[in-house]
Image (cartoon, rainbow, N blue to C red):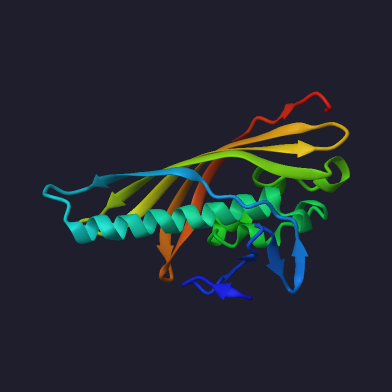
Length: 194
């Protein structure tokens, strides 16, 4: 089954056991979603925030979370990607120059180009997100800033806890929310073999 988002990008379908189905080949991709999806509204005008503005902000925050869920699933958890060190689909949520910068630094935003040489399995530990929604003069969301913390266990002969902390700026690009800028730091930590 192939689903598409409102921006036409494909969305992986998940079987009931959490594996991803892609082109008829099932791979053991762990299920992952950022939790504690809090959002804060930041108006740029005086006045009361109306219900429709809150609803539009909620939809925008959910769109940002979905894009980041896909980024971290494709970039860290999908064995079809990290075993080959190829992450083309991971950057679908980026626009223009931000996408070019992301593709130029795959080791920052993914498990890395050599992950398949070092790891046998990667499992998520935690993922938290907080999104701030900047409301424009018309009251609708104009800019999103999502702060994320992600960690995963990368198991193999030399196990590592992968840690990523990021800030992602989103704007509407041709009708869909896209990442237009980002700042990500990695603080991976070696672990004792089991």
